[in-house]
Length: 448
Ligand SMILES: [Zn+2]
Image (cartoon, rainbow, N blue to C red; front, side, top):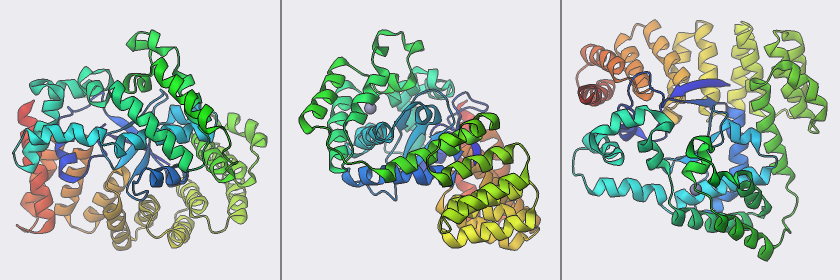
């Protein structure tokens, strides 16, 4: 598990992403911390899979990303990702409630609520790709206030305005979500109980509401509608042991890393799934610096699910953090064999290779990780180290520039992009990427 501070708009792809992020000023309050963990993201994908399919979305394209934030919120910024606050995952009591959250956000994507918003700005501009992206957010925030507004983070009316859905969008999203849930054989009781979680908050002042309430205005009509859906379709959904399992696993891993080890060990016996119980205990012992007990527990979990790449990955992390570098390399290698295309597992393997001094192999693996997922700051840091250790300072600077771009730090990005442009062969792919970062960061710095 890794905590990565990235800028709030980090789901938006490629150039657009880079440009948008640079409107966020350095050290900004708007940075969000993404909690990147292959097991947790996989569990959420398992819960989301039938819903995304019912929504007509490609489950392989829509990522489920956890924001390390104890407040209750979920949101989408484009069609590539659904963001869920860890606080919301910990708060909801059942899998079907979390699936209702996912169904509602999937509906915002499928109904084009975000695309339309961005599309409107796009039509108004005929600038180059980067210029367009920069002006996009400026338009969203009302011209020159863009940088300041977004930098102020979730408290800013600019960003709140960008995220906030209209009542019409909310009721359309609820209707679609109810259909997706029904087609997926998931009880509509989840949608009703999701609304009940926030009921009454419409009477609170904005400052006291959960951010979910602010981005998804709840009305009595919405609650009544959800109850009517449940009434008319009935509550005949079959038990779903698969969803219950992944829900318990996601929450189990999240709590084992965020709560005290004492809390985790004290509640281990309540966990009915034996492998999840062992995984939670392994993390608790690991955090207590007890390698032998941690190892015994994770080995127990792996014995119960020998084909599970995520338990092997966790073992690799435990070994790495206890400086058992050679064993960590071998363990991550097994995890990669079980899940050769998982970017976060590849990144862990690359990190282990790097600390074992196998720099060339590390570089190759980390580039494979980057090709699959660029929103991983720790991987970008490791990749820059690998390039530097192999004497390729130009590429090290280029990757560092991209990392600062993701973090919304244009001054730092500019320094490294200039260095990369000077060092890399003119016209080469790396030079081109550095050039893109350089131009966009110059514009962003000038706007401040
Ligand atoms: Zn909504």
